Structure formats: structure tokens, C-alpha cells
Image (cartoon, rainbow, N blue to C red; front, side, top):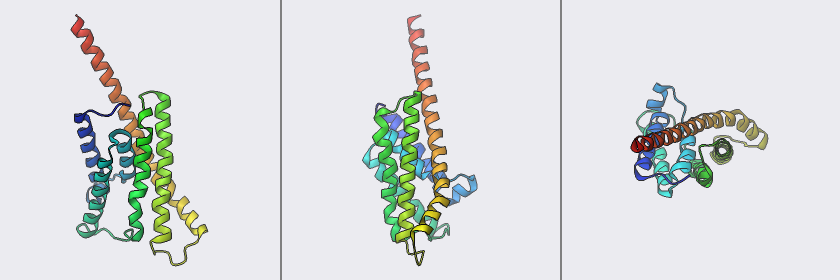
Length: 195
């Protein structure tokens, strides 16, 4: 897929920021009953936006929203431990998984299946990084051991990955629809110009 033009890049960047605001910040996300879309935003951002500085913007936005949620909205800081430092690495697995696949993306069946599979793998790796660092380094479990970790990984992993894949699937469908509209619109205007 070609890089997005300036206006399309800005529009998608703004849309992803709004989705993160609506779903990560508990004040809005709980009211709207939307699960956190952050993992999907990082994959979709890597797939379509690609730029390293945009990745940094989303990391800063995620951390900023977490701080606002904790300090001003009264959300528990249970998950903020030394392991929180691994969150950028977990999000990098998503962003750079999407970025790695971006040149292969087309609005055709097999490239879309490929993007979906890369998203699934990236989301699984991302969850393993964030969950593993929290379990082993977060200090919340007095006697961590592999059996308990694997049980927790299996308990929470499918929920987080399924939520991510729901959002990614929605983004891929929107990409296909948008691509078809652009092709139709272009063909329609070319035929009008000839008549």
C-alpha cells in the first residue's frame, strides 16, 4: 500500500486519537461501553501511518490518559508498577508488526487475510509482553511461578486479543470500503469527463 497523502494521514491520525480518547480514558470509555482499543490503534497506526514519530505520539497519549485516569478520575493505579515500563515494547510489537506488513496491504482477499494474521500474531506477542512483565516484575504476586502465569495468560489473553482483533477487523473492512469508494468515485468522474 502506498503511503497516505498529507490530508488522509492527518485525518486517520485524528480519528485514531479520538478512538483512543473514547476508549482508553475511563471517563468516556465506561459511559460509551467501549472496550479499550489501544492495542488495535497501535497495529492500525503501524499499518497505515507508519511514521516513528506517530508511534511516539500514541505512546505519550496512552501514558497521559492513564495518568489523567489515575490522578483525576479516581481509577486504581494497580497496574502501574515497574512493569509499566514494558508497555512501549508491547505496543511496539503491534506498531512495527503493522508497519512491517504495510507494503503488502491491498484491498484484496489474501493481503487482507495476511494483515489479519499479522495482527493476531502481533496482538498475542504484545499481550504476552505486557502480561508477562506485569506478572513477573510487577510485584503484585508474592510467589510467581510458571503454572500460575500460564493460567493467567490463558484467562486474560483471549479477551484482550479478541477485543484487538474486533477493532482491527473493523479497520480493515473500513479500508476495503474506502478503497472501493475511491475507485468508484474516480471511475465515475472519468466517465463524466469523457461525455
